[in-house]
Length: 67
Image (tube, rainbow, N blue to C red; front, side, top):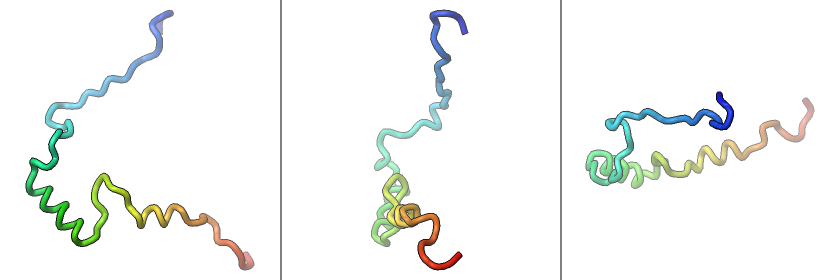
């Protein structure tokens, strides 16, 4: 690093084919799949996961009892 130039800056090299789409609703197959999962009460990608939140909020060591 040279004086006055600052640190390295990371530039992501993501091909255009791998960039996220602006309009996810334009993909009918995935829209239908998400709607089916929503009706079944499943966790959806990108949404909160109540089961995972309940698991990670528990104490990591059991309380009480003799160990």
